[in-house]
Length: 187
Image (cartoon, rainbow, N blue to C red; front, side, top):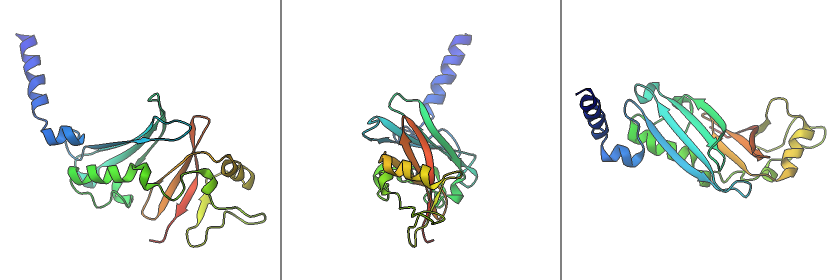
């Protein structure tokens, strides 16, 4: 009897998911949404990017970005408040959040800098890289030498919107992701 009750409850829980939720990867309640994308790089052609939101509703959700290597091990994660991320801020329902998450993580949308060789030059005697109206701020602790080493390595980069007016740029070196810095854009 007890086995039947547990089995029956499990079947009821599974049947509560609508086909649309299953198709779009929506999670079961509140502002649960999920998106995944493949990040094909020469260094790791099977790397993936995943974004998940959870919360009682989209106004109070959190969004987690996870990047995994080709074997599925996480190599980077960061949690954001969707209302503070330009790409996610307007999503007020799970279906809209699903669409926004997919756009947020899409590697094809990363046309700004796909390789570290595209990073702006940091001239000698300058305080930082020079990039005109789109300033680039190296990661904390970076020196011109460490920045130039990443730039010269010409490794894959993934930049994603991390606020209302900036991108966080990550370089894939030796199987690990490291933050290179933040590029701001006019808002």
